Length: 328
Image (cartoon, one colour):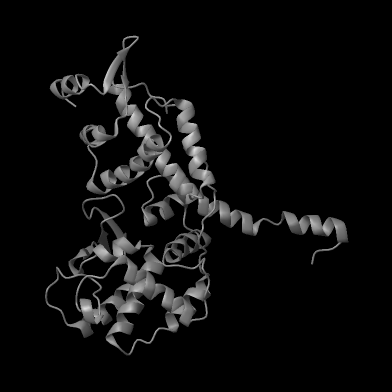
């Protein structure tokens, strides 16, 4: 925010001076202007702006419903508790509070309102995942169950093996084009537009089996335009068009069920968990698995290692041996 913008905002009657500190009065008819000034400050991507808009909308609704025009730190705590008791997921609560914290960091820096959320914790996330992963044999069973005699079957197989092996998110599969497959040295790689990225600036090494499956699919598809989507729709209403994340999730779930793996904890995102877990179980380091999944924070990758350690922990068997005098 430049000086002129700040001066104009400070002249707004919704801002009052009190003890030499600008106190922001949250009037509903000026919230859009307030948010627009916040957006200028954070200089974020369109996706991030949409996320902040949705999150802060809930905060302002809470203020309006409770007739609060000068929130305090206690207001933020009560809002966090409100989100929890109304059944919001832990990740949703965390994201909503992060947005509030970011917003008040801006209001304080702009001299508009003190940062009342500075010391508020955004919430605790469990160090485990909500979705299950597949073992190597289970993944192979699902892949072997796909009928590869049709164009759709070849596409589904190639897409599944790509997700299971390379850990792609559904949105990354949607964004992938044929010409994103390139050669680096003696290796075939796939350039990926990752989560929160505007460009395809990440690359993942493509295993030979994955490349063979994709080449088999593309040879039958017989496309000449390399800028086309890597995987295209075969549905009547979107034939040859770019697939959606929804359709990909449905295809993956259908393949799981067809192979006998019908569980609410097995979804398209389970393919990513599978790639991560099998990577670590088969000798990859945390850093190598982090690079595969493109995690910004290695702490996210460490969750997989933590879960593996828990499943292989022999302590319970040792206690059993102490009680019964033998290992079972």
